[in-house]
Amino acid sequence: MAVAISVLEYGAIPDGSMASGTGTDNTESFRRALADGRPVYVPPGTYRITAGLRVAAQQLFGAGPGLSTLMQTSVNEPVLIASSGGTRIADLRLTHFSLPPDTISVPDGVGIRCVRLGDMSVIERVAIYNCTSGVYSYESLTEGESNYIYSVQMQNLRIERFRHSAVYLRGSGAGNTGCVLQNIYAQNRSADGTNVSSLYGYYFETFTELSATQLNIEWGDYQKGIVIAESQNTNLRSLHFERYRATLTHGSFIDIRGSTSLNAVLSSIALKNCEFSADAASEYSIIRVEGRAFVFLQALSVEGSVISGNPTLTAIVCRPDSHEMSIEAMGVRIIDHSFQEVDVRPTSARSVIRRFNNHPPSNAVPLE
Image 1 (cartoon, rainbow, N blue to C red):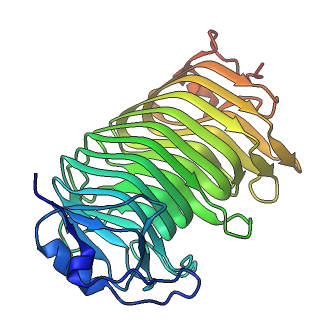
Image 2: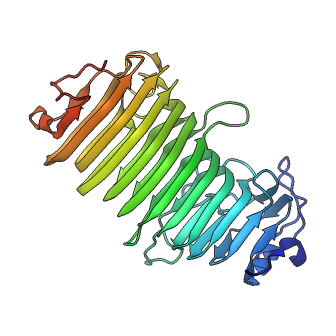
Image 3: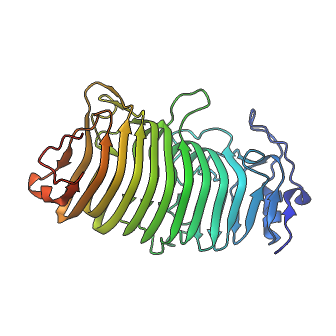
């Protein structure tokens, strides 16, 4: 194994201030260290940078996410750009100096931008703050070039204060496959305790295979929690929503959609103390399925919902494309009686609900 080098050897100075956004610009020091080709160690301290640092087939790691901080002070820049295979980013805190204004759109202002990130790559024990999106993959850096994220592992991440999404993984071409996500905590609350608004918690599109375990979405205003779009085989386990405020009419905690047949397995889902207001979202659902999809749901509980006004809250909403849809839901427990029925339109397509708690649903299924 190659011996790691320290960014201090290349002139980096950890004198950044999160209070003022000032400090030595360490961008070139980091670039020189990464160009060396050996693993790069970031000792404790706060390092100010002004441009995104590209980590390609390389290791960049710190002393821990509470000790080694990269502070981006250019609002449009990512903190890191991860690309190629065999890339490892670990034990760091990545942050912009402040939360980007809502006029900044992805891919600008993200924490980690993934560009053709390949197999054997790992992102682990990283905390990401003040971004448009925490981990983001879609557009390539080169116009007209396809982008993908392939056989990558992400685990033990904390993402706080984001405008667009905590994690957004989408391919602009073939190749999105084999990724594994585990234990990711997303919280969208500002330092003064007010909620930050975002479009999504997690967004996954154009995957052939994807597995995720223990995804958390808490404390924030969300239009949609998790989106699975045009992805063939998805397995999500242990999904936790808490203090989540719904802000989009016809939005949902989990949105599944596809123009070609897709399979999704969802298990162990908990909704706790989530907020619903008729003014913010007059209709909201736990799971919304559109197009052609085969979905198996096992073990869902809802408790402690806070409701104002009279929003329409529906457990499962289905909008089939012809009859190429099948939904099986087992172990659904609405403890607080907040979500009351299954909604399938047109009603002639109600046969798409194959099972619901061991019985076929009627036109309106009250939940016990």
